[in-house]
Image (cartoon, rainbow, N blue to C red; front, side):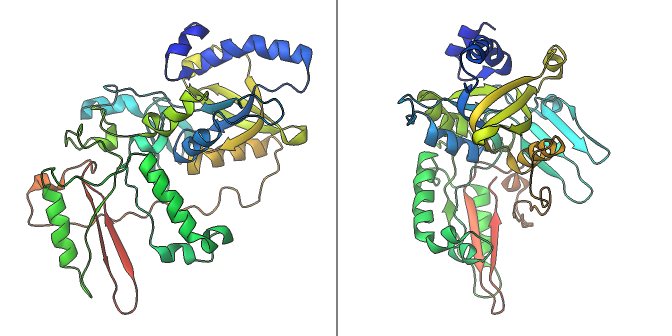
Length: 372
């Protein structure tokens, strides 16, 4: 694709970025050894990356008075409406995976689903522009207040929990999260979870719908949120924060797998990048590097850690605890019996989420059931 063609697209491929900036980098090397390709390089495009890009895009550089150059690098591709797998038979073409015996990604490297098979924990993470927002249920619910009272959290979070909740509410609104409108038909699982909450032991439970990032007027009730919405009803990050960042000048680059970082003098960075697509990578005769004033690693629990570990192997100083102590998300899926099968559809997605809680005398519990 010609470099100027990318101007008309929401995102550009790594090959377009390489072609566009080759001349700039050569000219920069001639004019100044301190020239940088971008001011902020954000690795990843999930929630952390999107929030950062939205906050920094368009911000004026105090040195030059010009808008900061913000790049967002995503290893997966941009999934547009209609490009998500719609049938089980289509799923194999959208899966990449690793196993304990082979840590090199197998399957389709640019596939939407990144399956990590481990000896004790298995995980599925997203691989596309918008990160986990493409395949999650889009639930926007804050933890209970006592969660942030735990000593493991940074002091700033524990001491100003009210501000944290205020900011979270504002972000939830910007993401388009809303509860199921009262004029929408009552759903079978909604009723089943409400009944479950009323039957909880101890002091009984509470039940309420939680806001999710879905446009209810467009939702087809197909249950495909966890495999990608083909009806333009899900408000994933590519439609909200990333779109906002792009409108203010951020460049969104897909198919770009960051391999490692190299620290330069003055707190600057050199970033080593290769094509995610192995066919394109095989045609590249030399490593592609960019220089950035600041780098934000927001590639997820696995992605960011792997980049740092590869960087450490090339001499980047890191903590000795890197790669240790991580946890999976704490979801609980309660079984239900005596209900029509259609009320327990899978994938679990785009249905009002029930949050049932009870407090036995000795311990407080929280059960969160994902929607169907």
